[in-house]
Picture 1 (cartoon, rainbow, N blue to C red):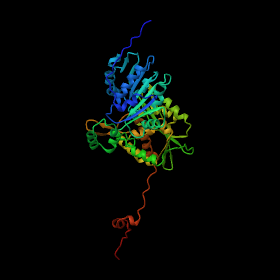
Picture 2 (spheres, rainbow, N blue to C red):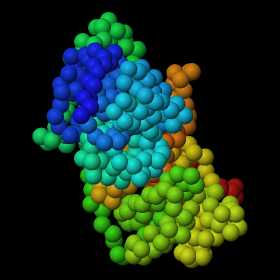
Picture 3 (cartoon, rainbow, N blue to C red):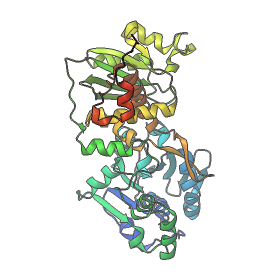
Picture 4 (cartoon, one colour):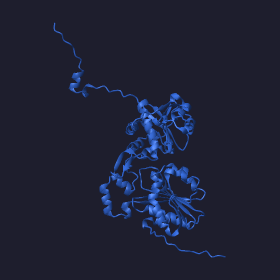
Length: 444
């Protein structure tokens, strides 16, 4: 009988004491809300390596996922190579995976192409900057991959308002099945007080509270509709908004040719806009989206498509999306949204917000509410300021479908404003004199 040789290997990682409870956790699920530059990425990469080595899973598969694949590569790849050096047998730089001496593999992924994970199984995963990911990636793609092997997951990041990351953090604090780590800069002492004072002097209060004090209450930086969404919630306009069978349902579409398509279903009732439903999908044909619309059973009015729906494509047999929609939904019912500038459309949404009601359940299912909360300006690293255009990410599609809806409302459904009569006490003497009836006097 052969004897198994046991070899001790030292990994060049000394955990900070703030992360020891995290490394020693027994819970299957974990969430870590941590300030910038506290070492959470290094800690999680090493946690992955340790568990891949010690859990004893046959053909173990582990993953580290960021909002974008390029981000995962720049944030975690060098750490993964460095700390696995003494226990690694293979590394593939093009596919971003390593194989350890146990046969387990750790691979980097981007949530922007979460479909690449389908068909795999996972024994453990770290989701970094989870606040920037599509909320449905976890439920639709990742969670099922952990089922048959009872894999574990860690959610880490810095707050960006009360979004999907907040939902995880909030529910985790109330569950014994979760390990929760909260690391605020004022409490960890990982950064010098002088550095924090300097950062505080150069950042807005919201920026500092969000990045260093892990505040979920701070406003999302650069968000277009953050204030409007907060007011809508405070006024109870994000609640149950049922379908009114006495009113027509209209739709507004944002068409994603390589990514998501978003469709909002809205009614115009008493001068208000009610978004009663929402659907989003990726990789589906136009016929599939039309089938979804038909299956809802609503009594439809107009279907508003973006201006690029006029383009004819070879993939659709030389027909435009507009023509395909007209065939199935009725020529008179399909309209093209006026081609206004992006900024005009954003202003139209802001003007609409005080009249806007959204169904909390149906607008959450495909992340429309989160899209509106997190839709934000693009940051210019060179000029250190926000650009006058939005960042294109997973939030764009839901926000764009609402933008098209707002333009359609302004052009078609908005009641004309009736000028208020001026009472005498609101007029100046010159205005009263100008409006005074005059008589022609003729000499006799």
